[in-house]
Image (cartoon, rainbow, N blue to C red; front, top):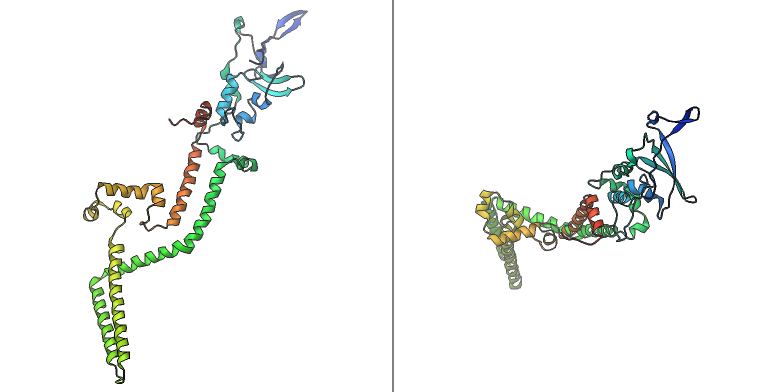
Length: 355
């Protein structure tokens, strides 16, 4: 230890000049002050168990290997390296650097141990520290003032990562409003339109035939017309127009059928994966590998965000949510980055141990 262990008895000449040992039990729970000469080679906070260095979670320090030191490791170092300037059950009051003396306030000792069996009890030094529980690292949230200092922000990689993702958010918002929003509306409209057409196929076919017959009749009336003086050139022009419009009608019918097939009946991977048993028997025709690949496309973060396109999601939103989820995982991981993890890194001197 850096200090001596002081034991004492108190005597007083109660009768004439004979010294009588006093009963100190009457002074129980009374504090006395001891002044001890010491030398220290570091800041006083490291020798004072009541200082912020050992009891404030926002107090930062760095080991020789460049790692952080948890409060628990600091306390263990204090005890293992015999750094106390006062005895057990004592509090450091002040230190005079000129005289190199420390003043300690201690509980009174009632008697000297038998046979002068005097030892330091390291377990008693633990009582000098404030008991702090930091299981989930939630207490670290109160240290926001420490984080937002400019000199720390410059060295804070997390700050730049979160700042970059915030910029991506505003870029994504602009791109979505300018491009993706209209595209999604169009897809929704096509699906609804296709479903309405398929709702009553008999009625739909009657309407198509009626529409076609009416179109043909209109063109015939225009060609024959009431005007007898229509010349051959105009007649040919009307016939050509009829042919073109008929072609457009057929193209529309063909396109309409394609819409029905692609959107109303063809299910995407994520829809097939969520089918119940009865529906799956009817619609599920994929083999093992195809099913496994569909799970990867739907559930793997990188593949789902950057490779999967046929799931009705906005590409730019998926792109942003990938980085946003990274931030979320990063934050939750920090909450569980508690003293046990810090202790392991400290003992390994900052070396990365995969196991």
